[in-house]
Image 1 (cartoon, one colour):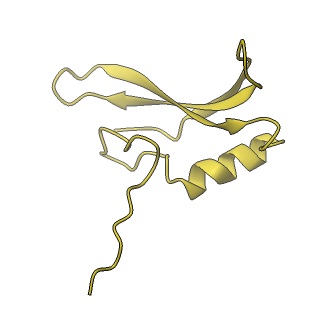
Image 2 (cartoon, helix red, strand yellow):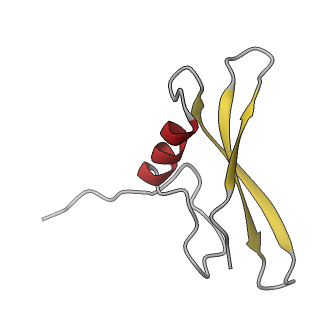
Length: 82
């Protein structure tokens, strides 16, 4: 079972500061919580925390209930093939 998560600002050595999304996932095999992180975007591009949450929603990074993993980089889209 996953939770909504939280975001933080992190400074980078050679890049601009970024928003980082953190969340815990409970591994079904062990029952232990493991923290996952994903860079959401730069603070220069996403000026406020609200903008960062919108980007998380847009990229569908928030884990669903009973989901053990979030796809790397957000959702994978398949083109409509006739």
